[in-house]
Every structure is written in C-alpha cells, then in structure tokens.
Image: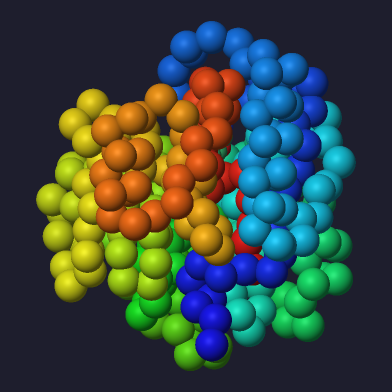
Amino acid sequence: MTDPTYEFTRAITRRPAPSVIDGLRAQDIGTPDLARMQKAHDHYVATLKSTGAEVIELPPLDAYPDALFVEDTALCLPKGAVLMRPGAPSRMGEVAEMAPALRVCYAELREITGPGHIEGGDILVTGREILVGRSDRTDAAGVAELADIVADWGHTLREVFTPPGVLHFKTDCSLLDGETILATERLDASGCFEGYRVIHTAPGEEAAANSIRFNNLVLMPAGFPKTAETLDKAGFEVVEIDNSECAKLDGGMSCLSLRF
Ligand code: CIR
C-alpha cells in the first residue's frame, strides 16, 4: 500500500529560462545567476530521479520568467489533476503551457475557471484533508471552486491562515508524511495543524519550512543546519539543495515540481 501524500512515481519540472532574472519577487535581494540556478536545478532533478521516480523535464519558457515554479500551475491528486488560476497576472499563461503534460498523465483533468484565483503553493495535501491558505494569490472564490472539484474525488478541503507578508501557505510548511508537518512556529501558532505531529523549523531558519518529502527523501534548501539536524534525528533522510538563486524570487523546494 503506497501513501499518496509522499510516495510518487512521477514528477514534472521545467528548466529555468534566461528571462528568470525578471521573475516576480517581493523584495529585490539581487539578480539570480542563471548558471548557478541551473546547476542547483540539475541537482534537484537528479535527487528526485534517485528515488526511482520518472521526471518529466519540460523546456524553458522565456515568455514566462516564473515558469520554473511549476507547482503553482496545478494540483495533482490520485484521481485527477486540477489546473490552477494564478493570482499573479504575469503567471496566468503558464497554466496552458502545463496542460498538455498533465493531459498525457491523467485521464481526468479539471480546471479552475474563475473568476477566483488559486495557486498550488497555497495548497498542502495531508493524509486526511487538503489545507488551503488564502494569500495575495489565492482568494475565497478560488478556494470555493477547488473545494467543489476535490469533493467529487472524496477529499475534504479546509481553509487556513497564511501569515501576513508570506507569499504562499507552503512558504511556511511542508508535509513530511501523512500525519507530520514541518512548519514555522509563526504558522503553527495559528492552530491550523491541531491534531498533527508538527516539527518546527529552528529559530532564524524559517526559510527551511519549504521542503518536500519525495519517497524516501526530504529535499531541503541548504544552509539550515539546525533544522536539518532535527529532521535527521527524527529519522528522515535529508538531501540539501542549493536554493540561493530561487530564494531571490521567493521560490523553494516545493515550487520546482509537480509530484504524483
Ligand atoms: C512568484 O512570485 O510567483 C515566484 N517568483 C515564486 C513562486 C514560488 N512558488 C511557490 O512557492 N509555490
């Protein structure tokens, strides 16, 4: 019996394009270096593959600087996938670019038609429910439309809080297994994970919260040694990936793939 929350046979990624230097960012902390980003991306893809999964690597899309952050374009569930409707106008066109790859993989492909907006970075699928945080990118109408779709596949959806100033709900949390969540203290303090086992990121290491469990591994951004040690002691096998360049665009481990 596999656990669909972290046992995957496939992932979809997209290589960064030269236009990535124009990607969206909340704050300017420097221009991303494409060569360094590509090297880290190669490490990320190789790590996913090392678990035995097939990785579908899509080509760069120069027209969409943020297109490497594929997670925001869709939600992948065991019974079907849902195309999202990004709240960032410059990212709306990425969805149509993702659709053909998902059509090959899924018999059932649904879509958020609007008027609401929702991005994959605001959605955490756990062993018992789908948590969605409202944010500047995800609104009530987007959440309501997704709730109707996933109800058809037997999922319940619960709307939760995203800390102010945080881009996406999952900027501050990740799933480690169906019942265990890695989260910042500020997000956990909202009470949204009541009943789950929660492991906190170390103080000052909040940016480690956007990690992913992928089969036997946890992919974590490099440079957060205390959190890495906590996960190691809790029995998780951690692989650290250089996230310096994606971090300049508020991107992290989860954004770089769709996993199913
Ligand atoms: C954006 O602002 O949309 C991109 N620069 C970063 C997207 C990160 N995606 C994610 O956390 N799921």
